[in-house]
Amino acid sequence: MDENMKLQSTAFQHGMGVPQKYTCQGEDINPPLQWSDVPPGTRSFALIVDDPDAPGGTWIHWLVKDIPPQATSIAEDTIPGVEIPNSFGKTGFGGPCPPSGRHRYFFKLYALDVPALPAVNARDLYNLVEKHKVAQAVLMGAYQKT
Image 1 (cartoon, one colour):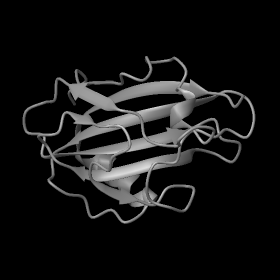
Image 2 (image 1 turned 90 degrees about the horizontal axis):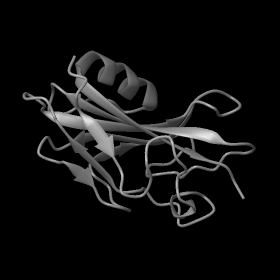
Image 3 (image 1 turned 180 degrees about the vertical axis):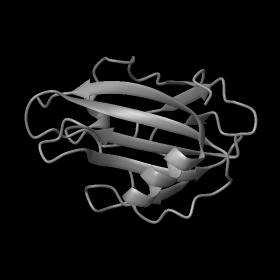
Image 4 (image 1 turned 60 degrees about the vertical axis):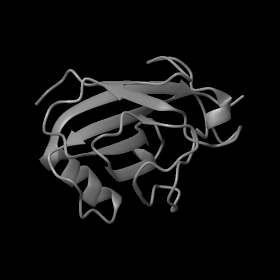
């Protein structure tokens, strides 16, 4: 698997705080994301945003599949592909909203070898991404309510 793909945001640096604008205490919209060094043969992308620090286990904030292979970014407050319901029970981005303490939020972009995924729920998406990924890139941001 190709490990050179990079994922970045103009809103925050890897390992730093997610601006309040993108959280439940702000506008609760997705931050802008950009990626580079995509491996040849990529036929689509999938994006998973989750919080492994949630008290009841990993909390899923955003699931997007079937992002076109020519895409190199996701603009702020946009829907880049087909969304699957998250742990909030809705489609769309659910911003960081930790019940207590500082949590880490992982934005995981996967380059895939298929043009579309038949996933209809989170478990399907996680399993299919593992099966079809040719590269992945991770951007981690943290947030603690004020």
